[in-house]
Length: 354
Image (cartoon, rainbow, N blue to C red; front, side, top):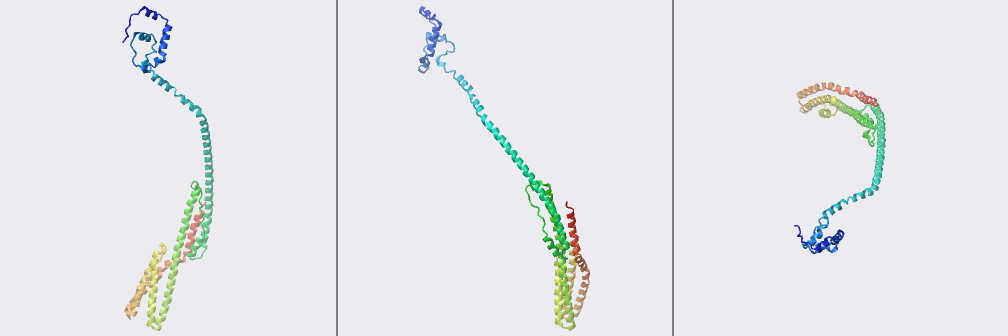
């Protein structure tokens, strides 16, 4: 709403014709007067008068009424925030020294890594060379070991048990463990060789154990067979004397000895290639034992006919004995050559090693 304008008096015209400079000074003094600046705190409403309106109407638009002096504050806040980037200038000068320090540590770290890598590479090649040397040494030792095993198998006594003991005396070489041994192809080959050599020697030893089983069986068998012959001569003397008590003792002793031979053959542990032949000997001696037991019963009961029938059956079974014994006797006679042939197989394997 525009203020009312009153009629100007001559005195008022004189006042209006005063120099503009004085008006400006008056307005300026009124605007910047300390009491005027603080006036909003005392009164919120200005008195409506023509003189006051004329005074403010002649002022520039920037000189707003005092009750609106707080409106520029948002602009002042914006200016304050625009000066905050000064803080970003400070890190440029402060960070420059840590950058140099970080680069120094980076180079030191890289140098340490290179040194460690070089050390690891050197250790790698040293370990690999050590593994290669160990493998070559073992391979050379294996050749000598196989030659010694062959000599022990072929130069020992004919008893397979002695041959086995001679082989066990020969010490097998040991493939020593080394760091990073898995990276050496020579060491890997040596490990494979160790497995093969152990298997070859074990196979030879197992064969010799089987030969020893046959040898032991045949030795026990011959001892029992010799006992039967001794008893047979004792029985002949008792028959000559016509001593019934001596004949009865002879018959019982002979029967018991037949039983021992039967049990020996039945329970023998021998290689598969002789198992059937040994079983045949057990079968024959089992039949002989049955017939002889019938003879003992017939003699004790004085049954002459039963005695004759049992004796006939005994002789029939006894006639088969020489036939079933032949494979066993032949096998035992060739034990030395069998051991030698088995040792030659091992020797031939040793010659293939480089």
